[in-house]
Length: 217
Image (cartoon, rainbow, N blue to C red; front, side):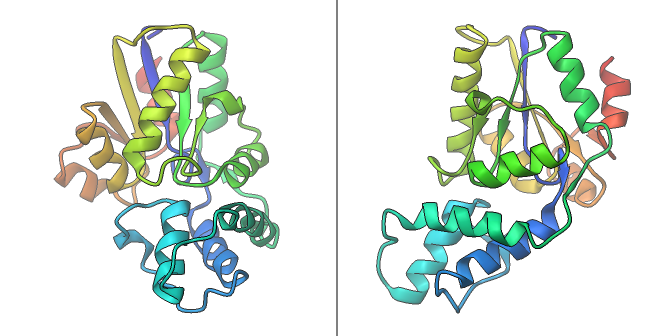
């Protein structure tokens, strides 16, 4: 396993945070004066914070997003999240990350969220994260973009030129499609989208990370 890199999505894969976070995204945009918001987030071209902001800003104001607005949006997200109770982990998430660290198994994080909200969710669940292993939509609007960024970050962090195998873990159809587009192995987590994942080619799906730990170790 030490020659395999595991890439973790965060929302819905490591943290039980999807409903809260979607509400926070909407509130964070409203705080910027964006009133006409398309909340059908599942049907977005990119399931990322940076795309959500650009798409809704442009459709409201018919102009490009100011350069500093993404930072303001990120801070607004933190404020909106603080109105909710701390999120809880997906069962087994902390244990799995701790075991990977203890066994020197390479892993990294790739999330459509922005860095501050991503770190807050992980911290609330006491899940270890080094920011050098965290790739987000702050720099890449597309999921393929920040997953590739995560791989490069892992190569640098673990001082490797390449990995024999790369496994992406996620809960959404977009996670699966990204893995397929990049020719990565995929493991589905959670039951909510299990049927969709299997129908679209996923061969490994687990209800939570406890069951994945049993299979892996």
